[in-house]
Image 1 (cartoon, one colour):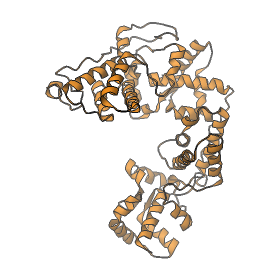
Image 2 (cartoon, helix red, strand yellow):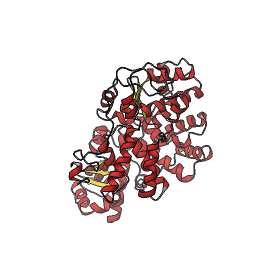
Image 3 (cartoon, rainbow, N blue to C red):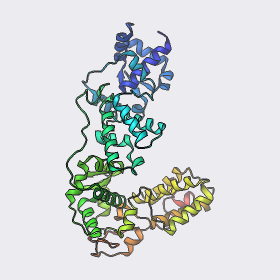
Image 4 (cartoon, rainbow, N blue to C red):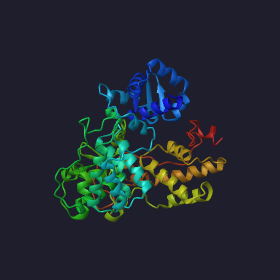
Length: 455
């Protein structure tokens, strides 16, 4: 057995199990080859060949080999906890060695059926089909989200939204079959079916035409993008007012119990918690509580129907004069290609939408675009343009209003199709002024402006 053969074996076993102890590597190797390979010898080999093993995504960590993506994410303990006490599934040696190729996909009947559907029905080319098959296979390894959410992330439904509901529904069903028969790190090489933990698709009865459900989803998307989090009662109120309908909040919540609507919401990064639809970003830490505290008492911004539904588009932001001014400057002075400007501007709008503090947002924007102002004049010009955009940008903390609008508005009891709808007394809102000499510098240094870029 050569040095390279041992490296190949360890790399393949690590890719197959995600996390595996050095002792278990030795046991498996002896079982497959009849050659003794003690834990001590495995450890010495790992120390000598660490660079070669890492190059094959097998990272030695204490008594373990850890697949690179798990090591990078810091999730070793999570996997150890999730696999504790589970028995290893041990394939034939040749089958396990195939997993040393990170692009290997076992061509089961389920995989072949999904591949054919992707190419023949959904029009995917071979490269895209392979990417999706790998994503679905890998989705069975993810410990952080629910099984159905993992599957939806792998399917990338947004690529195929122009197809019929029937085709998308079949796509989800075929994807679930592949998911359930994919060998999983969470089950030490077993499939979810073999481990007795298969994915069950949401299938509650929803006696509403898909066309109507699709319209509900558009409203939910738009309102979540505008507000960050919105009660189902508010979605129903706005929808009913603008469409002369009588949808109930419970009907909207029930969308999460039907496979295709639930998948479309997940694909839009929308989750449901305690009767609210909200951006998945708000699941982290105390972000939802912080947002609700910031938005408390402020009126909802509710544009007319056509304008509201523009917000259901992922990268839609209002084309304000302030946005055009920053875009023009970026196109002329900062970036060579139009797509770079678009990407940078989308990031700027997103920072404002999620209510990133102004100075931090400005610093993040420069860093994100790898923008290094050439002098004090340019940083002041950029700061002025960005803060003007910030003052006229819609944000979750203002329930879709801009700081300027909140500053001017007084609580009213308007109709749900009007610009301002019912709410209690609004909180005070400060707009962002030009950078004062004694204020923190927008570059993010932590110094006062006069001691940094304004000095």
